[in-house]
Image (cartoon, rainbow, N blue to C red; front, side, top):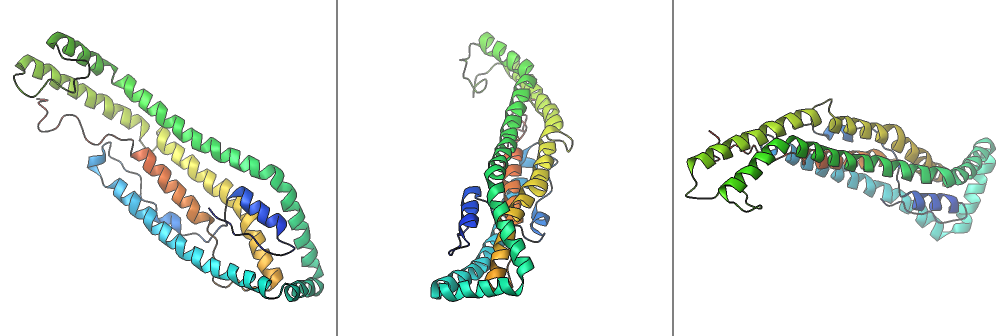
Length: 289
C-alpha cells in the first residue's frame, strides 16, 4: 500500500505517519457485496468457488485502481499548488486559519495528537495484524494435523498392504497390471476409508460453525472494527483536513481502506478454501467397489 507524502511545512508528521503505517484511508461501503458466498462442498471439483473468488478479487481491484486514480488527481492538485507558489499557499493557509481560528486550533491539536499517538498506535496495529495473520497459518496447520490423524487407520492398512504385497514405501498404489484381486479389494477398502475420514474431517473444519469459517468471521471483524477505523483516523481524516486547510476541493475523492480490507479478506478465503482436496479418492476408475 502506498501513501503519498505531503510537501510543505505542515507535512512532516502526516508524511511520517503515512509512511510508517503503510496503510490507507476508508471509503464508502460497497466492495463487500462482491465477496462470494463460502462454498458448501468438501471437494474443489464440486464447485466453482476458486474461480468465483478470483473473479471477485479482480472486480474489487479494478474499482480500487479507479478510485486510486481519482484520488491521485486531487493529491496532484495539492502538490502542484505547493510547487507553483509555496509562499502564496502558506499565506492562503494562514488566512484560512485566521478566518476560522476555532477549527484551525482544533486541526493543529489533532496533528500534534496524531504524531504522539503514532508512537504507540502504529506498533500496536502492526502487531495485531501479525497476530491475526499468524492465527490463520496455525489453523491451517491444525486442520492438516487433524486430517492426518483421521487418515491414521487407512494409512496403517495401506502400510500393511504394501508390506504384505511387497510394494516399496513410496508406492502411490498397487500398480498398473498383474495385481491380484485380493490386493484390489483391500485397496478399495483403503480408498473408501480415506474418503470417509476426509469427509468427516471436512464437516468439522469447513462447516459454517467450524474453525476455519469462524476464523474468517473473526478476520472480517478485525478488518471492519479495528483496521478500517484505525486507518480512517490516522490516514484518511488527516488527508481530508489537509485538503481543507489548503483550499483543495475533494470532490470525487473516495477512501480506499475498505477496498484493501476486502481484497485481503478474499485472499484469506482463497487460501483457506483451496486447502480442500480436489476430488474423492474413490472415482469411477479407482476399483473401490
